[in-house]
Image (cartoon, rainbow, N blue to C red; front, side, top):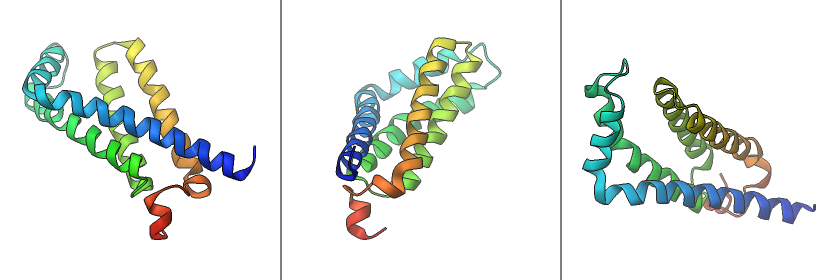
Length: 135
């Protein structure tokens, strides 16, 4: 694979993750209250108090939407990938508290995908606003 193909492959992978996260957040916004109540209800039998879960559940769609947009644009990519990874780690934590091992495994794949994007960012993130800005 030549460098331009590697750059294109990286860009497509970054765009795919960006669209995924953008849509995850966007579809939850119109039903934000219901989403937050559902998540809070799921955690009733865990050690996490509702006072922690509910604000987190309200914030998640906005974080997903924001990191999705930034990944699509390729803007602040390093910080965005770190933020998305921290979001995923927090989701893994909650999913493990619920003992939902299937979803935890899927979230681990997302985390590995984000880590790979971060690892190859310096070399292949050339089709991005970051590259155009010289950062």
